[in-house]
Amino acid sequence: MTESASAPVVSVAGLTKHYGEVEALRGVTFDIAPGETFALLGPNGAGKSTTIEILEGFRDRTAGDATVLGTDPTHGGIDWKARLGIVLQSTGEPGNVTVHEQLSHFASFYPDPRNVDEVIRAVGLEEKAKTLIRSLSGGQRRRVDVALGVIGRPELLFLDEPTTGFDPEARHQFWDLIRSLQREGTTILLTTHYLDEAAQLSDRAAVIAGGRMVALGRIDGLGGDEARIPLVRWRDVDGPHEQRTETPAAFVADLVAASGGEPRDLEIVRPSLEDIYLELVQADEKERNSL
Amino acid sequence: MTAIRSTTTTTRTLGGPGRILRLGAGRAVYETRSYFRQGDSLFFTFLFPTVIFVIFAVAFGSSGDVGAGPDGTGGISMAAYYLPGMAAAGVLLSGIQNLAVDIATERSDGTLKRLAGSPLPVLSYFLGKFGQVLVTSILQLLLLFLVARLVFGVELPGDAEHWARFGWVYLLGIATSAALGIALSRVPRTGKSASAVIVPILLVLQFVSGVYIQFSVLPDWLQTFASVFPLKWIAQGMRSALLPENFAAAEPGGTWDVGTTVLVLVAWLIGGTIVSLLTFRWNRKDA
Image (cartoon, rainbow over all chains, first blue to last red; front, side, top):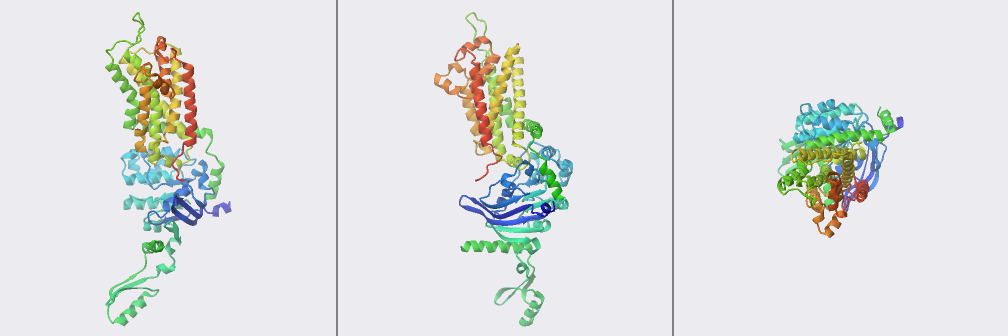
């Protein structure tokens, strides 16, 4: 029992996927611990959705190992699916049913579903509960997708770009929902384009670019300590300069002393998650273009 | 806590026959409700046989009785003559057209993918589809018979034997059509093209199977061609149930040929079921 509690919920090693000649994934490796929220970051076409769909059992892998809740997703049966919650990247189109009908219907598939009205309230659709799904806006439909993903009280929740089309208020409401799932011990695999979302929600993250994993670690440690060293930028007669330094204040003091005046366009920047992410992705692009 | 819950859920199995039936019934209710909220399928499959029947009955209303003997008795109105063909078309459309287009659309709009990620057994999904087809086709035939009886004064059979014959022709016909509908749902590549692919095939079949045109006036080779497909036999079975016995003489062999009807329909039912079971996938998994 203690062993299964500490065993990873998701375990991926050397995951590889070819579509004909195209290598969509080239050896992706990571584990997700029970109760952890793990973010997959990367540009469009990097392989995030391919990875998540292999783990959901929707795609077959070309090579490598994958285990989800102790089962190879290629052979996941009904009992396995009952423990998963899936929010796909694209919205399904059930259309002719109301929000409440759709959720009650899906709740009936699961052995221990959540309360339908509570889930509708949690995604902020209580006023639309009796509305046909085809009459909802894109963002509201996305909330139905999220509600369908959590209705079965999943142990592991897959969220593939869940907040696309959300307004800021809906996004914050979604974050609150995810935090309540985290408190209940739900393990979550999230892909997102919004780095603030990843920073808000996830414990660890992997950055994928061109089908390869270019970084893996705690979200506040991505890219290593090197990437977090503050940057001093200024301009003089020779043009713009930048210098990474652990002691930016001392560096600027030296700069002032040397030039005898106020440096032009001076700024001291602590790289944000977005800066670090872009640097990782661009470094990978450069490397591949030079091959 | 996670570990405790996971061990209890894995020991319980969700593939039992009771659960398959219960979820199948739930699907049937859900599917039937969505069916009647959908404008286009309501017209093209549900009302279609009745609409065509009314057009034919009105258009040929003045042409007098058909099939009368030399003494001028035993004839029936054109409306009565067209009724079995329209009933057969209704069975075919409710099964094949409805399901093939419906499932192809569900495959391309993401509905099947979502179900694939849920613990819904495939068999429950099929049971739901079949339940929807059963309910809608019975209502459809009821409407057709009501219009025929009340508006056009068509005599319906008064004895149990003919209704029993109608019953098994209907059940065998609808089961075969549903199985073929699921099998054919793999043919259209996208949901948008589904109607365009499926409807013409069935339209041709209706013209050569004695639904719109009297079967015996077709050339022999076309009759032979049509006899391979189930609709000809469903229509013939419906005529054997709904027309006076003396009309059997107008059939190709001079009899209703009930035995061959059963044989051909059962063969298509088995074939359709096997193809459905072998080819049905929740989604198009790329290799």
